[in-house]
Amino acid sequence: MARVLVIDDEVEEREAVQEMLESAGHEVVLAADGREGLAKYRQNPVDLILVDLFMPEPDGFETMNLLRREFPDVRIVAMSGDIFATTMLSVARRLGSVAVLAKPFTQDELLMTVEKIV
Image 1 (cartoon, rainbow, N blue to C red):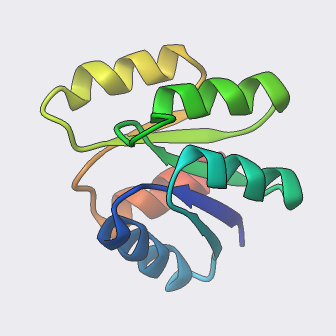
Image 2 (image 1 turned 135 degrees about the horizontal axis):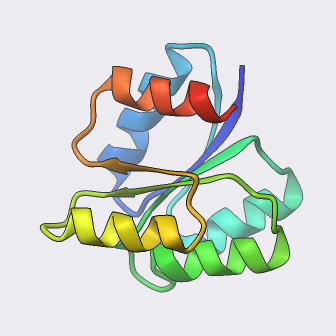
């Protein structure tokens, strides 16, 4: 199973994703923002990072850029539930996200995405 870092400023979102992943046997590390996520990744790298695009400083796009600059091979899945999710997720893919998930997503969608990547 994979170790997954979930970076999302919404507590309920983080916990829901954690529950979905852990029920499938994955190990989950949580971060409330990009700074915390980057620090946790530096301390103990994971197999995959799930990052919400719309968070306070730094937002998901900047978090992705910081991670990519420091760790070029990092695998990132961008998540968004914004009304412009389709457009933003397309931009995230161009910035190096290996996959995208539009919120709300199902447990099956999440697990299939994780399994394809790891």
